[in-house]
Amino acid sequence: MFKKLLVANRGEIAVRVIRTAREMGIKTVAVYSELDRDALHVRLADEAYALGGQTVTESYLNTPAILDVIAKAKVDALHPGYGFFSENTDFARAVTSAGVTFIGPPPEAIEIMGDKISSRIAAEKAGVEGVPGTVEVIKDPSEVVAFGNHHGWPVAIKAAYGGGGRGMRVVSNPESAAEALESAQREAEKSFGRSESYIERYLTWPRHIEMQIFGDKFGNTVWLGERDCSSQRRHQKLIEESPAAEFPDEIRQAMGEAAVKVAKACGYINAGTVEFLYQDGKFYFLEMNTRLQVEHPVTEFVTSLDLVELQIRIAAGEPLPFTQDQIIRSGHAIEVRINAENPEKGKFLPSPGTLSKFQKPDGFGVRLDAGYDSGDTVSQYYDNLIAKLIVWAPDRAKAIAKMRRALDETVIDGLHTTIPALQKILAHPDFTAAHHSTKWVEEKSGLENLIVAPLNLGEATEDAKVLREVDAEVNGKRYGVRLWFSEKDLDDPPAKAGTPTSERRSRAKAHSQIGGGSGTVAVPMQGTIVKVLVEVGQAVEAGQTVCVLEAMKMENAINTEKTGIVKEVRVKPGDSVGGGDIVAVID
Image (cartoon, rainbow, N blue to C red; front, side, top):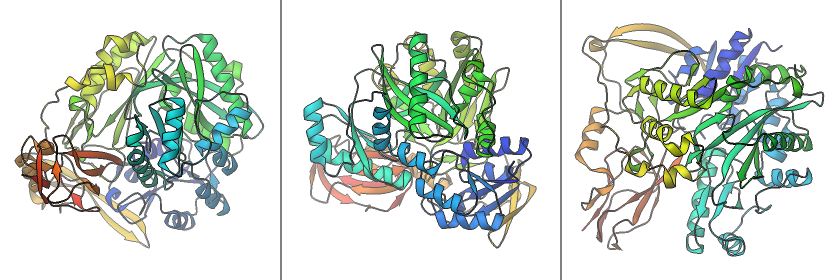
């Protein structure tokens, strides 16, 4: 078994892996960016090393920096988590070339299945039908137009080397093809370090159902069960559950067998997820994620298996400890993603900031996987997932009731979260009847009428005690001493990205969001301007996009609510802005 494990990730998945490794008696090593110096995963690890930088590219996607930590810390295994480098063939090869075990599939399998285009080809060779789409990288918007005209609109542009809805755009007509392709490629590059994209037919009312598979080095491959991930917005999952409701067992068995065929077709080893779209009694191969999934805890609840431990043991050369017919699934599990987003009116605007209060739920069958605690900051530079709340109950109705109760107990101050939207979805009769699809949240859930309570910043009292960690770095290795201070004795920390200072708060209150019907166009959250679409003297109409703002790895169109002439443009691409900052003035 491994002696020391490096977790090349951050947030809740890094915390998740660290906890299991420590239970197994394995020393853990964390890495961190400048903004994550005091992050929860850093505090929990046995050792932590600085990567430098703030953005993902400067830190968690910096291969030389991570390889340097591998050498310094003398680790013998690396767990990539999900996202970042988890499906990057070059990174996996660099790790193994350094004599370190990569906890995941072999690079050759990532090369085939991590690339969504080649995975489609492999699935077809294995006899598993996929959603109609291309098997070549898009080079020009005219290819999108030609595909849409042939197969019908809308179509989906998807990142070839990504997942989680990042780098995906739905194109409704030929006129929007060029802009959608540019936006998808830009987002994919920033999220996964690769911009390649392909096209798929966009089904009308599908459910997104995926199969968890595991393979070992001895040729054994099994499917553990399915997860329904149909509750999505912006093609990113909000709620996942297992087993899928109103899902025929014969389809379940056929889908599981198809998933195993796909895995064996590429010599797959370790944890993987084969994703399908299910509509009108038929399922289609969508893609394979060559890593652990965000929603893996629901499978853990219904199978009573620790999937991270299983990953580590298989990577260490152990065989699967069970056969297909020995897998037992019981009860029903549901997971919700608590993201730093404001879901008011269904917009889900990014909401970075500091968690001034985080009251966590508890009780039988309740689990919270969090990457943050009270006092931690959710930065605009990273993914907006704060925590995953997972519940288990004997049946689906009781699981829904338990989840609603657990969400009621969860209190987060200092930023907006998706909790109000999750509560509304779980209470909707369509959801309880399993009549939802991947389009249901945005089209029929009623979230466009959702009103969210004003933000509670949860200011600390004068005499509150605050835990602080005093840091020292020696040759890039982090050491820390934890001390309690009276807050009145502490100076205010310097303003930094993701921290809601009093100055930012006053500016946010002074200006309405996205123009507010006035001539000023203001941004509703912190972020970086990636594109400016107007110029001084240009005539614009109400609803027209003035600029594109990137926050928490998502692009957001900033629109004017007034028809008129552009009098001022106050930003340019690359500028950092805070919530309430004015980006343009319309006369």
